[in-house]
Every structure is written in C-alpha cells, then in structure tokens.
Length: 359
Ligand code: PMP
Image 1: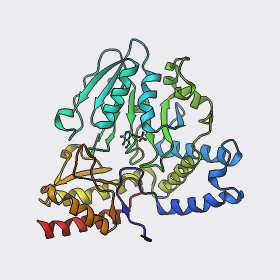
Image 2 (image 1 turned 180 degrees about the vertical axis):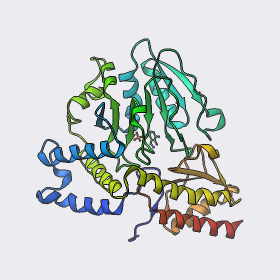
Image 3 (image 1 turned 90 degrees about the horizontal axis):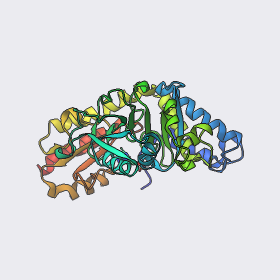
C-alpha cells in the first residue's frame, strides 16, 4: 500500500503528517548539525535544547506551575504502576484505587506488592461500562489513584473524582492533553507518549514537588522520582527520539489551538460517531452514555457473526485497527489528538453502507 490509511489503533497511533515529515528530515540531518536526531548525544547541546524546549511547551500547554516537576521516564505507564506506590505509599498509609478498567486493575494489583491498598470504588460488576461515581476512601489515604480514560472499555471520567484532600494520582495514558486540565487538583499525573503525545518510549510524569519528599532513600535510583527531578531527566540516557517527537507533536498542538483546540477536535470527532451509533440499530455502543470516552469509542454488531466481514471490508477501505480488545470484543475506534476528522467521516460512511447491505 503506497497511500497512508486511517489507523484507528489504540496506541501507538496516528501522528500529525507534518510531524512525520519533519521527523523524516531530522532523522537524516537535525537542524543542519550534520547529525541525525537519533544520533545526537543526550548530553550534547542539541538534545539538551530539545528536552528543555519540550518540557517548557508542555508546561505552557497544560499551565503547569513551578510547584510541579515534569519528568521524562521510561518503562511506559506500566512502570508507573510500580513507581507510584514505591514512592508515595509511606508505611502506615493506604493506597486508594478506583477500579474502572483493566489498566486500573493492573495498577491496583501491582500496588498490592508495596503496602496496604484499598479499593475506593469499582464498576467491575457492571462490566466496566461506566466509571464509578461513589468514592469511599480509607482512613489515612496516601493517595487516590484513578484512570482518567479507560482505553479498553471506552469510558472516561468527565471530571476528576473527589480525593477528599488526599493527593490525586492519575493514569492519563490515553487522554492527556486532549483538553485543558486544572493541574492544581492533582498530586501526580502520568502518561506514556504513544497515544496523544507522540510515539512509544517515553513516559511523562507531572508530580507536585512536595510529594518528592516521600520517596525513601532505599529505592533503586531509576525507580525514585527524585533521580529524574534532580537530574532534569538526564541521570541516564533518556529516550531521545521519543522526546524529540513529543516536542514536535506539542508544537503541532500549539498550532492547532493548544489544549482547547484539541478539546474541540475531540468533541467534533467523537460526536460524529456517537451520533451515528445512536441512530443506527445495527450497532450497539458498549459504554454507558454518561461515561462515554472522547478517545476510544467501543461498540458491537448486533449480529456478531458479521464481525470478520466488517474488519475485512473496513481494511479494504483503508480503515485499520478497529478490532476491539479481547476482553470486550466488538470494535474500538481510537481517535487521539492527531486523528483527522476526515477519518471519522470515512468510517461512518462505511458503517452506514455496511449496515444497509447487511441489516
Ligand atoms: N494505562 C492505560 C490507560 C493505557 O491505555 C495503557 C496502554 N494501552 C497503559 C496504562 C499501559 O501503558 P504502557 O504500555 O505504556 O506501559
């Protein structure tokens, strides 16, 4: 296939075309340095400028005050499932978790290894079709952990849950920077960059500086947030190319109106598909109405025998990555920041036609 297609995969996922083209050129020769961007030393002036600039742009786009450190880690969001309790769960306190999906469960299971953990809310018995609303914290809560967007089930918190004064810790892997955030409500936010902010390989951690005091001196260096904070994320070789790509994606986000621009794009894309689903009996949306995600839209076919045919025909129309997660089945339409609205329009046209032909 020589043309580019619409890639609805849940991450890694589509990048802005302008970023891909700029990266292509930079791989060969970065800023007339005579070196490709992937060849730059992480200690050289070119890369130091890239990482500083990327941090500054993120701070500006999300209005992150100096009370927060911005860290570039590795190991994906999955490594944060361990780092959060390792750093924040002091002896005698309790890690509180909201179970709203598979990744929330994974974070919770990992945290159990490090201390006392409490389930503050769960919608597991509802097949994770909705996000919890009733939150019951334990006494002496070290923090309240939640997953802002549940990538697999297609649900999302419209507002932050009330942490009753405990630091709010958020896995924002699949929705960071799709809208403005009031960072002051959070103790810590983390996200892998491969969905809304670039490619796989870097994990952004935004942490309130006063929480850094909780980390014990016995932590392994690379699992200690203070190592990254003290060394501007350059204690060891940082993931240079993923950070470069994130910087370029952030420049693109600025050019598209910043966080508000992303929110407008997200609503536009999601409304087109939800509107269609709500008016076509052939398909059955998975997530409950009030918990619907703007980033991942899940649905099934009323006749699941047609699933294979749906995938094959969609792919032949250049619509890829639509198969749902094995735990939910059906289909999942992942539409992160860079996803073009034309892709959703093309998908809806295909779905309408498919329903007509097979309904
Ligand atoms: N949390 C959420 C909400 C996710 O969507 C994902 C990845 N799909 C993860 C955590 C795991 O991230 P990673 O693969 O970067 O470790």
